[in-house]
Image (cartoon, rainbow, N blue to C red; front, side, top):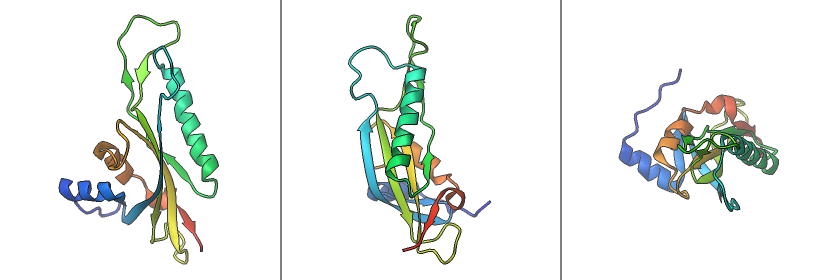
Length: 155
């Protein structure tokens, strides 16, 4: 694997507040960010596992449609089971409240050395609007294999 440098919590927080993060050996910057409330429009009832599966697929498809020229990557969200009486609609669960669709860029190519930069759209969920990126999500983002997932861009 690669040699990842140790980042202090203070340095990570400073970088996250600016939208900068190290992924593998690449320093990447957040260049655009869309955010939505996951359950916007849900008037009554409790979200279910099936509903959440559809929402995750919908947000990922939205990212893929909006950024068809770039690769998209989903950070699997934390799901919280809700204890309640048996429901005819399925298992009740909650996703974090906010979905974030971020386009990240690095001046380092991912694969082709003659490329000008590399980009990746990352979809993640967190409980508050960004910025900063939630630190537990940032750890998952840092584990992404940038070379395998990002797309090289020629300008």
